[in-house]
Every structure is written in C-alpha cells, then in structure tokens.
Amino acid sequence: MNQFIQSSGAEFPIIGGPMYPCSNPELVAAMSEAGALGIIQPLSLTYVHGYDFLEGVQYIQSLTEKPIGFNALIEKSSRKYQQKMSGWIDIALEQGVRFFITSLGKPDWVVKKVHAYGGLVYHDVTERKWAEIGVDCGVDGLICVNNRAGGHCGVLSARQLYDDCQSLQKPMVCAGGISDHQGLTEMLDTGYQACQLGTRFIATKECKVSDSYKQAIVNASDKDIMLTEKLTGVPVSIIKPKDKDEREFKARGLLAWMLRSKRFKHLTRLLLSVKSIMNLKSVVDPVVEKSDYWQAGKSVAGIHKVLTVKQIIQQLMNKPLN
Image (cartoon, rainbow, N blue to C red; front, side):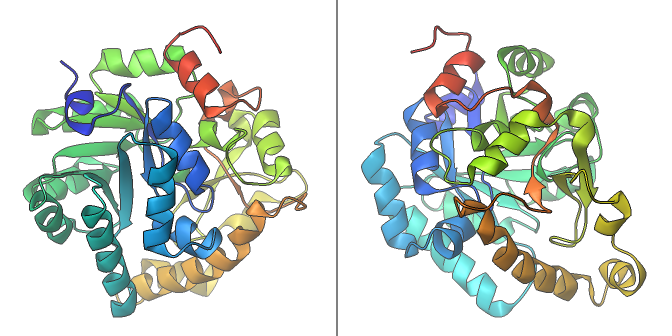
C-alpha cells in the first residue's frame, strides 16, 4: 500500500511543489481539488499575493474541501522571521492542515508542534546526511530533491538519492525532473511513494504568473537550465537568458567568500533572499515580458503546452483528458 496516499489524504501520489513566487491560492487549491496535494508557500501567499495569512488559508479552503499542506522554511535567520514562521505553522494547524514540508533547517521543533496535532512532517533533503538529521528529529518522510529540480536544486540523481536514503526506512518523495506519466511511473517503480512537481504546474492556466514566464518554460529545454547562487545564496535552478553570459549568475569575489563563511553565510543568504523577494514579485505582473530569473527545473524538457491543473494530473495518471 502507498504510505503517502494512505497518510496524506491525497488521491494520487503527487505533491504540488511549494514555489516562491508562483504558489498563488487558486493554484494550490486546484492541485488538491484535482487529486494531488497542494502545498501552501507562506511567503508567496502573503508577500507576493497580498493575503493576510489566516485569510489566505481560509480562502484556499473555500476553493477545495480536500487536504492541503504547508511549507515551512526554517533556516536560521532573524528572530523576527522565525517567530513569524512559527506563528504561521500554529495558524495552519488550527485551520486543520496536517501535512507539513520543512526546508533549509533542523525540523525538530516543527515535528514537535505538528505531531501534537497528529500531523505529518516530510523534510527536504539533498543527500543522506540531511536525511539522517531529519530522521533523528522524528520526521515522517523525506522529500528527496535531486539534480533536476527547480528551486533549490540537489546534486545527486533521483536514483542515487533513493539508494542512499532507502535504508532509513522512511517514505520518500522524488522531487525534480518529473513532467509526465512515464517519469512518474519510473520513480514509483524505483520505490518512491510519490513525486513532487513544481515547474510543470507553473505552465498552467491557474498559475498567476506572466504569460511570458509560462512561455519561457514551454520553449526551454533541459540544456537551458543553469544554477545561480545570487537569488538566495544556495543554488537555484533558472532558465538561462539567451543574451546573458552564464558567469553573470555565479557568486564571485566577496559574495562567494561570504556565502562560504560559517560566520556570515546565514546573514548573507537572508539579505539575498530579501532582495530576491522584491525582484521576483515582478513575475506575477501580467505585463512583464522579460526577466533574468525565470525559475524552472529540468522537467521543462517534457513541457510543451500550457494546460489546466486537472489536465496535467490526468496526464500524469494516464487518464483521458476532460
């Protein structure tokens, strides 16, 4: 029996990846309504799409009665940010959210909060050492972010990650590179319990980003995807602008030193993230025609058309399109 489906309440073994700035409420709700598990990305909900957090959660729940999840980014940063994230988790729990994905930090305190409500915590990992920390903290499953993912990208292949982490005996979700039924089936046959898709759901009618962004995804191949540290301080996958030199997106000099300094790296990541929050908000402006930072993973190779969320999930599950 599929542990993910049994415990999460999703109909299909698909998670709609939480995305900044792309996870607007209508997209999250549409994912869950179509049988996947839509995940709230709180910074997108509040800073980009302008909702009070509680009102935003309630709005999503007004669009679907099916389960939704929440993404908690818990990397060490300012105390104010940590307090805000903790408060958002509390509100989500009070509103009945029971599936949480933790990213970029030690999830012990989130596990304690969520387990008190009978919920589940799956932790983002890019290699075994992070998976071991998550398991030691009591997480219920692992989101295995591979080297084909969008957003914060891993360094190992989906197969390598599975082989490295399967002995930890936790349900594992493949994150990265999936855009069609064949890819989903291959990962489930490998042993993953589900797949998390982000990029595929940007090129949807429900996603409130610019048409130029969606078309950039449709037009791109996996060879157009590169990594930059300049957005958040850790490697993020983007579509390389054809008129830019790849070196422009690499951290060099003082910035590179600060990102590798134990003393300054967390502060530097915070400052870069704040700056990128302001810049990336522009992608939800319908008149924006060009950006240096169209975020996307290598699953662009299998994306050839803008569809509805329901049509994509039907394709993933090899069902006739409605």
